[in-house]
Amino acid sequence: MNGQEEWHNSPIGVFDSGVGGLTVAREIMRQLPNERIVYFGDTARVPYGSKSKETVMKYSRQIVNFLMTQQVKAIVVACNTASAYALDELEHEVDIPIIGVVRPGAKAAMEATKNGKIGVIATEATINSGIYNRYIEKNDRSVKIIGKACPLFVPLVEEGLWEDPVTDEIARRYLTELIDSDIDTLILGCTHYPMIRSTVGRIMGKQVTLVNPAYETARELKDMLLEKGLESEHRPGLGTELYRFFVSDAADKFQRFANSILTYGILSAKVINIDEF
Amino acid sequence: MNGQEEWHNSPIGVFDSGVGGLTVAREIMRQLPNERIVYFGDTARVPYGSKSKETVMKYSRQIVNFLMTQQVKAIVVACNTASAYALDELEHEVDIPIIGVVRPGAKAAMEATKNGKIGVIATEATINSGIYNRYIEKNDRSVKIIGKACPLFVPLVEEGLWEDPVTDEIARRYLTELIDSDIDTLILGCTHYPMIRSTVGRIMGKQVTLVNPAYETARELKDMLLEKGLESEHRPGLGTELYRFFVSDAADKFQRFANSILTYGILSAKVINIDEF
Image (tube, rainbow over all chains, first blue to last red; front, top):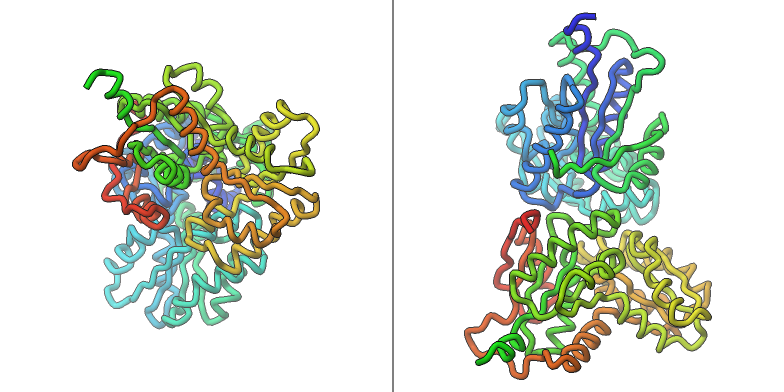
């Protein structure tokens, strides 16, 4: 094998503030079954959604430094807050491709909308950052964006209440103003939200297209790898570790949640001291 | 003024992983109106409730180091998780009095119970640490403790749903097994919970005594200051800053929450880089 071939077989680095980004990793596993993945969940410092831009940038930079030590060939920022706050700067700092979840989600929403009214539900930080608005308005000033922060969705998902009257009630409260504003497309702007996709879909009604940035991001990653000739051409052989998981704290809890959403069980997640990177 | 008098007038250091400890600060303000307070909320690294013992110890040590730079005369660990995981070691590391919220709460519960069955509601970490059990069993092996983790209470309180049908429903689910186990005393083992005290009280019924460790901690602090001759004898004069607030991130959100629970509005909270301590 020459160096180029080895590079093909290098893993994709995927990171998130915690477990949410596993929905993105799951889509990559589905759409790109030949690719190895190194996942990092910043479970010691979760959530990013309520932290400042400076803090999120600092943390993201440390994680990228760590992923580079794992010889990743590309990085997916599987966290809306980190994509919103840190992606632009990170792109200038690393020499491998790096993609976030915001642009693929925003692009898909712009393709889906017919009446030009797009809703975004996300954490407070993602909504306050206005990142979806900025991206969409840059490309089409006629589109109207209605953002709504839904702070209780993440704890409800982590408590396992994916189908539950309480989640229904909270979702109804959060989503009322989006229904009233006549959107025809809704971006699930937080990586936890695909787990309550059917609740959100039922409340919004069939006339609203739900956009799942996790799915769109895996698609964009696939296109990018093909375009740059970086795709792994065959599934790694037996004995090769396909997926590796690292966390900054409390691996047990991470593993429990991972096992509830991934098809493949996770054997172990390794705790590292992310402050050192 | 000699050195001894100056030391009397030094502030009390109070810290928590975030905003929750403000319920403890509030009790100190009520019961000890002459005391100055330096409050630190670790808003960059909140929540502690899902973090490991090692991480919580490391963070607590950094905060104590910071508070020592503020010439505090005593420290209150206004966080159940930090009290559970770090207090024992911290007591050996600093030469000023340091008290947590667990022991005062446990003591009050032991005094209150008549049938020897005490419930504890708290975060997962506090329940898993078994700290209330250890303290109570050490003093009275005949008492039975029933612990219950209530992970959604903190986000519900922070979302302002103090009196709300959703909080009622979630509380009913969490509390059913405590009602069934016939406890007559319930410790509100997380500093956020005093905000939903009336909901919890209504569901548990009048026969159950609620113990608020914030109140008990302020009482223990008062006794301790008197005993050691450390109490401030008169209210600091005009021009003296009575209460100072520091956070590790996002001061705006902290301030909003603080203003919703404190009688005195907070003029400002200063952001410091806690990693440096």
